[in-house]
Amino acid sequence: MVLNSETSIEGTRQRLREQMPVARRWAYFDHAAVAPVSGPAAAAMNRWVQESVEEGDTRWADWAAQLRRMREAAARLIGAEADEIALVPNTTAGINLVAEGLDWRAGDNVVTLADEYPSNLYPWMNQASRGVQTRLVPTAEGRVDYNQLAARCDERTRVITVSWVAFSNGCRRELKAIGEIAASCGALFFVDAIQALGVFPIDVREMPIDFLAADGHKWLLGPEGAGVAYIRRDRLPLLRPMGVGAHSVVHSSDYTRIELTLKSDASRYEGGSLNVPGMLGLGASMELLQSLGIGNIAAALLEITDHLCEELGKAGYRVISPRQGDERSGIVSFEHPADDLLAVRRHCLSNGVALAARAGRLRVSPHAYTNHQDVERLIQVLGTFAKTS
Figure 1 (cartoon, rainbow, N blue to C red):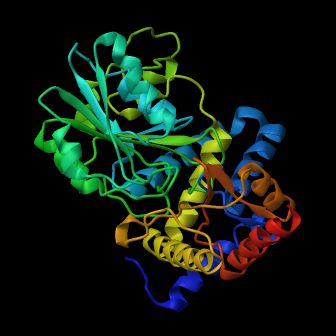
Figure 2 (figure 1 turned 135 degrees about the horizontal axis):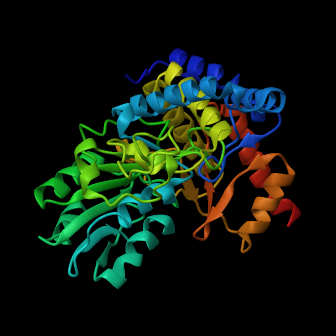
């Protein structure tokens, strides 16, 4: 449930801010690239390092229990079951579980959006050698024409795959509408959730979503190299197992028993060693965000991005990102008159403000802990660039 009162929003913001050491020095507006790690995530990873240094693998049973809790936290975050979650190193790995695992037939096609991040394009385009066509549906500054999307699908469409939020301009898509399109043509629905997971509520059953993947190093405030993939239980038999190893089988603790009997859940994809400290750090951040309420996080994030857009407009900058209703996200893209946007970014960094340049525009991506003083600092630093350039 989203809290709308100013007091509740500020309470959520302050409680999260207290867990973000980066806020002591930086006005950080680059969560859509690589977010700073939360305090609880850092503590979990540091604790693992200390235990590993002092006690080696004698603590493995404890680490395994923590990994189970992390998997359960990931499942709660999206409305899934723990056995539908695979721990993966990044979003790309999760996408490739499906792109490489499906039993494609020549003439099949994938329908996606023309403005997708490359990692949600190349794995599907890579199936061209198997006779699979990737169809790109144009967008208007991230906005999707759902009728046009449906028109690009046919009886040979195997997968519709989209980013929940467009990486360049922040347009948030109506996943339920896309899921209904996929169901109507008998296609599977894949969601790249990296630009929204952790700051907006989602229910994979309601959408309905067949597959989902997200890395933890953006809005989830975790480290790089730790992510999750969701594979709906009844879709698992559709995929050829990828990355099979010693941990993929039901008897994974018996290394002398060589029998390829794969686990019946998504953990079959965790064939080798995991990034244990990274996963524990990600789990700690997931629990932090859920303890505050994802609806409350969303309300605080939308309040700060609305305020940010208002202040950018007052300063004479043109906001490009769609900002109507549920199209809004944590990403705000705007035009800047400078010819060299990387120079603007360097200027901001030298003044304690982190942002990005994407697609010929500046992109700012605050989080729910970002406050109005951070926005004021951003606007001031942007203004000083014109005076110094």
